[in-house]
Structure formats: structure tokens, C-alpha cells
Image (cartoon, rainbow, N blue to C red; front, top):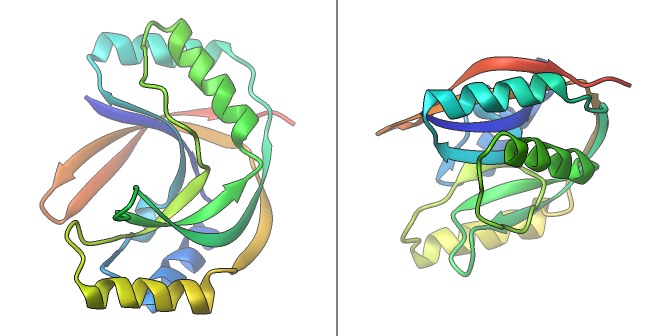
Length: 178
């Protein structure tokens, strides 16, 4: 099962972000229900491995986080694949989650963590106009800021790919304590 561990966003904040992303008029804004902060992408895993991760996450005490949201950034390499809203304040939790995943027996590829919320998916083969639009969005909205939030829940998600985009289902929630 394709899965990941993430911080879900409060409904009102996700709604505000979805409206903001739609106003940017970039390729494919993410729907409100898909907005989250990914801490660990687990890729395809057998159910037994996800059960082990679930048990490890349930047994681990995680602290709540104060997330700060500031600045837009294109992500995905030389030809960006997504436009993200940078998220600070979640790095320590992300490291703790990776440790729990490793204890459960899953080895993930080493990637530099960049806390973000994917606001829009960009074309895989962008035209000059696409890149111009992205440049305009970064020039006009690049330094956007949103109020910080205390986040008190982390979730394990299933991800199913469809022609019109991914669909996510929350499998389990884990409270983050003060």
C-alpha cells in the first residue's frame, strides 16, 4: 500500500490555503482535502510493515509543534514539479518520525527534509509561459506569510493515484502532546 505520515491541517486553514492556491492560477492547485505537511513518505509497503509502523507510532510520545508558514518555493529540482508553502518548526518531529519508521523495520532513502505544504502541482514539461507564470507568482506572492499554528495530531495516510490526481485516506491518528 502506498502510504505516508503527515500532519493534517485544521479545516479552516486548509480551506484558506486552497482558496489562496486557486488564485495563483498555476497548473493544478491541490484540493483542500489533500493539503498536509508530509513528514515521511513510505512509498509502497506491505500491510504487515504498516502495522509495525502503526504500533511504533502508537508507542512513541511525540510533542505538539508550532508550525510557521512563510514563503513560496518551487520544489523538485531544476524543473520544479510543485509549488510549496515553506513550513518551519516541524524538523525535530520529522526526525523522530523517521526514527520510529526505522525501528519498525522500514528503511527509507536519505533525502534532505524541506518542510512544506504542496499548494500546486506543476506541469512535468513546462512551457515558457508556465515558467513565466511561476516567476510572476513568486515575484508577487513569494514572501506570503500565514499565522503560526499549534498542530496536535499526526496521521498515517494511504495514497491512491488516479488520472486526476492522488486521493488520500487517513488510516490512523496519533495525538501530539504539549
